[in-house]
Amino acid sequence: MLESIYGVGIAPEQARVVLVPVPWEATTSYGRGTANGPEAIAAASHQVDLFDLELASFGIAEPYRAGLALLPIEPEVAQNGAEAAERALRVIAAYDETRPGEYCASELAELARVNELSTWLDGWLELEVLGWLAKGKLVGVVGGDHSVPFGSIKAHATRYPGLGVLHFDAHADLRVAYQGFKGSHASIMHRVIDELPLVSKLVSVGVRDFCQEEYRAVVESNGRIQAFWDVTLVRLQQSGTSFAELASRIAAALPQDVYVSFDIDGLDPTLCPHTGTPVPGGLTFAQATCVLAAVVQSGRRIVGFDIVEVAPGPDGDEWDANVGARLLHKMIGYALASQRSDQE
Ligand SMILES: [Mn+2]
Image (cartoon, rainbow, N blue to C red; front, side, top):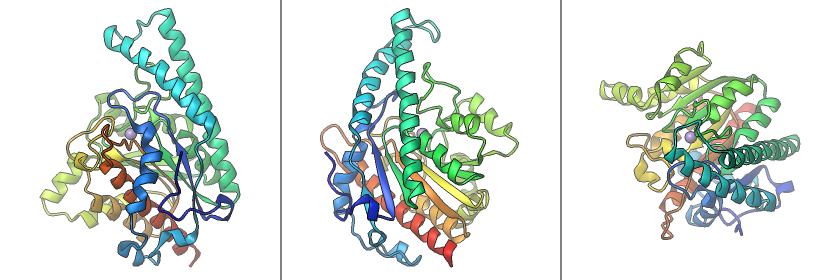
């Protein structure tokens, strides 16, 4: 059961910003718990102060005043997500014991069903988001693992052709498939590039754990994928380039309309210790918001966003969700600020 978010929810029809909770983690390969992300973020959000000095300089001192609604969890999403997660566990166990491509018949059947459920989620979310976009809402998705927002990115690309995706992540998420899962959390950006021709550009930031195949996908993309690798950002700062300068370079790499897909593991893992696949390195909280600020300052428009891979600790540790709720608050604020500058 979700409580209101930031203690200020209003009816979605009256809201400017609609948040869609998707408690789904069918294919998480390492740690689990991101299915609890929406509930944990909503609970932790109550300790976020509604006044934000950083956003105030963009004219959005209290983002909730624009009207904010967190939708209830759709029962079918919770039910199908639970089924997919349970079946996927058996596939992952088999993957660990045998070689890839050597699944037995029952494992192949489980895999096929998981893929079917992932496809169902993509379709459900796409329609849900398209519906709210048609009503003039700004839509944010609260995951769940990183397979979740595909339908939302697709809906935004339909609504805003030429869309750019600003992708914060420790991982490139460009794997063609992972463990046989079509809708794997490790494949989402491959699918965005492969299946969504209306997405003109993918800009990934903070990536530091990737295979050679994913590296080649970036190099051979003719500029459609641009990665600001973590190692590059670190080296440039070590040799004197300011992060503010790097943030404006990241913003400049994007087209006019920007969708932000934020995998919390793009941040330093001390800020998200319970996320599924933490990696040392990454952005500080202030660096992440510096990039969002640079996008808005450059005159670009944030048309939609998601936050994924937030997992509360097993013993009720709410730190990850606390960071997630604060990051979500900044994303809502910067998205609103960018609409504002667009209208001026
Ligand atoms: Mn990811």
